[in-house]
Image 1 (spheres, helix red, strand yellow):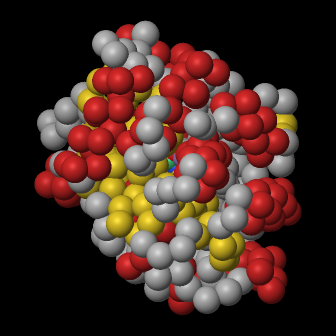
Image 2 (cartoon, helix red, strand yellow; image 1 turned 180 degrees about the horizontal axis):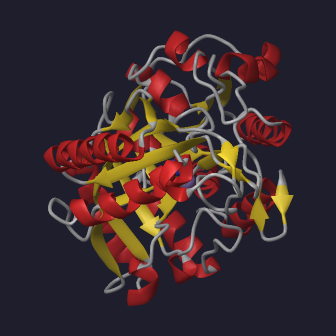
Length: 395
Ligand code: HGY
Ligand code: MN
Ligand code: MN
């Protein structure tokens, strides 16, 4: 039988690494992230699993022979919630531990590194799944200009040989919904049908830094005005191609020199867009590129668009999904649904290698990527029970 108090105690212990009020600050390769990984490694070792760190810092607890892989990520957003990723890792640990105590089935555990994208996005599972090479990942930089190669040296001599994906029969990830659907409906479980795709690029607009008092408005080449005009035109033009499930975000903005009496000469910002349909992602991209080109010409700005990073939309594996649906019917009768994921997950990358499936528990108020992120305890336990049952543990 799964031990729910052990599970909850471990979940709160993981929260303590980088705890900040009700939230957590535990970015990839930070001191807090590595301390959390060391603690998880110890828990895996005590559970009788073979502990392995790969070159990216992905942490695996391996069962012998062929096994089902469960897990998520234990790094967080710069100011993150205590459950995003952490829930899936600790639930996987509890299911694997219980499976060993019950003499089977073989369950392995993973905590992927840098899912939250300090260096891009789902970086650890992207390298493990072959979506990108370690060399490509190493060249990525965070917003402070630190390279992933520099950051991952903090893993030190923990790093061992690569972990071969062929030993796993499939991957299931338990995660908080990070949206309002389940909470608003009073439901406990979401069985994921598919995960959206996303595209992201960094954009730099360059104008002319100048005096805020003596420079007439008509003579300005104001980088902020360029961003503002782009954003207004983008919101208007995208209405022609999007659906209510489409989203787009300018989440990171660095204005230079960022002084109240200086016309900003440069702005660097992130442009991210997401949708469940690959063609629509393409159409959104061309709207973005056209609007950018028009505005820089009108305002007289220089434009530099970085490489477009992204992941394509992916459908969950029917057989694994069916196991989650059967378990959800049993654990939360009348209080579960099938639903898409608007958030990105490591499961998208792992789907390149093996069958994957995901399940959600509610986020209170639909809030996530914020210190207020939370989930009711009985919903956390319901998620654990569904995961355990779908993984083949009885009752
Ligand atoms: O951005 C995402 O969807 C994920 O939570 N990192
Ligand atoms: Mn996550
Ligand atoms: Mn996240």
